[in-house]
Length: 188
Image 1: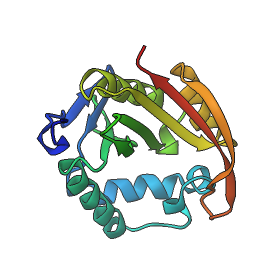
Image 2: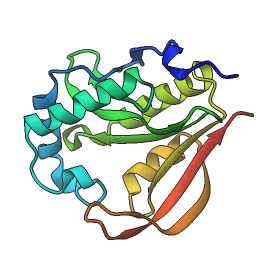
Image 3: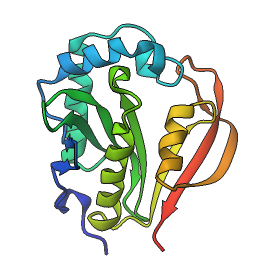
Image 4: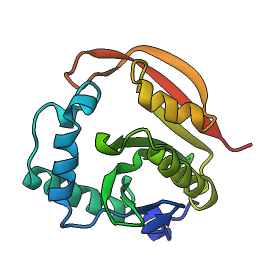
């Protein structure tokens, strides 16, 4: 039988050339709120949490939920920082996972002030390596609205296969139905 995921040793920090991906830790609410509020125009179409200005308190609450969920292995979100300066860039992680397969779905958002520098692709590449090499993943998914060009670009740069486009399968940030692209990589 499978080891209880709570007993798995999962790194609390993953490093790439430019980035540090860190387990959520209390105290970052203000930095997260600033990043979301600076990025509302880009995030609003796709992210329910970015429909209007947020507060440090609201972000701190969600951060602490992510911190607890990480310890319980219910979801594994990481905060993305520039290694050189510790500037907060956004979040990436496995918001949905199934330890029985095991399979992991990657979710991410980036502070739009730092867009188009390849940061999210680099972060996702690092996380995918962790999924296959450390967590024994059989499958990693990226799911996004078909109109979310930036998110699709990440999946395509990382050589994910577009398996399906599911009609009216998810919602836009405002709750209206969206077609969902399902990208995946699997173990050979």
